[in-house]
Amino acid sequence: MHDGSKTHTTERTPDSAILIGMHEGAKMLGISTRTLWTLTNANEIPHTRIGRRVLLNVAALREWVDSRTKGGAA
Image (cartoon, rainbow, N blue to C red; front, side, top):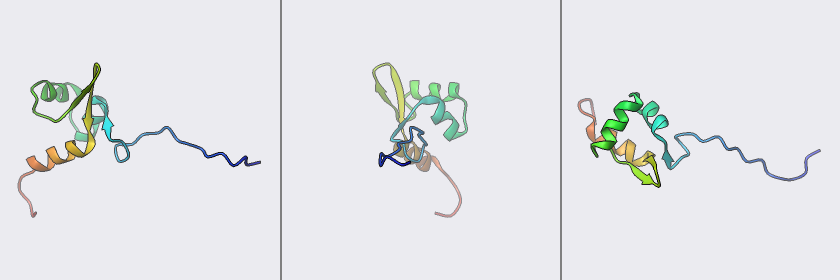
């Protein structure tokens, strides 16, 4: 019997998240977490610190990749 309440999923995907963690970001970029840490520590990749957490803005990450993409048809 359906009680009319809505079911909410807690699953988060890079397509729906605004900010993602380092592990998820590394996976998205296809690089190791260590390499991603190196890039963020050198301020070479856009990131946000909230408390002790380092998070990546998905839109900024995509723009960062696009700005570094070379070759091919535009």
